[in-house]
Length: 278
Image 1: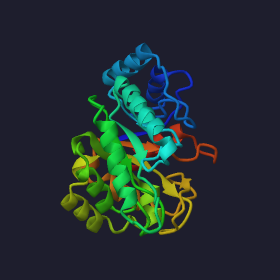
Image 2 (image 1 turned 30 degrees about the horizontal axis):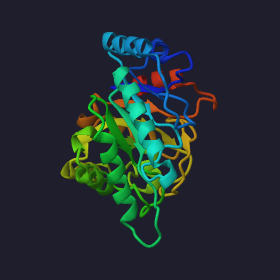
Image 3 (image 1 turned 45 degrees about the horizontal axis):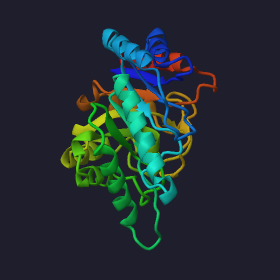
């Protein structure tokens, strides 16, 4: 299993990789640039190359996450800025050797046309991926809103990917808190959910998992992460069942859990490795 966490790039991409290795993780996530800005970043390519080489040498895998303002359903005035920003994220992540760049599924843009958001997402993905020829994928992440909101079902995720011109350049990132909050995954409907995921082809394109517990109950629609073994509603046995799925044995499980509630990511990673051995 590959457990790790989100890490800072304050000291560079290479330093982020070395830090994860030093705390016993085998996977990590990072923001490729300022997480609150869509500004295109001139990045240190040598530092990114060293990150890539270190990961290969030390059996580490990484994913990147787009800045918070990134949306695949942007307003007209943010459309070009978002395209340029995402291409920049992909370039940085590719230089670092990352599997993919995680992007949140879009949001509803019309009260009268339920298809408008999907059409804009597909258009945006086509515009971005037409210009992208690297190895790093865009990874669509499921949303946390209540069932019926945009981006909460496997069918939506798969259909958007299939309807683009470049499905081979798109994968998925499953967030366990989001899945629980939306009602997609109760922790106890795993056989049914994974059967559907296999039937739809979702599993074959699942490249990463955001490993988070939920501070709120099943179907709450609230995106509030909790530590895996503390203060969360998802039972630890539900996580154990998830870890035992053969399709997930080699993909990164990345913590985005609170690190200021009495448990560090280093401790949580260690606990996870101990947990799967019991």
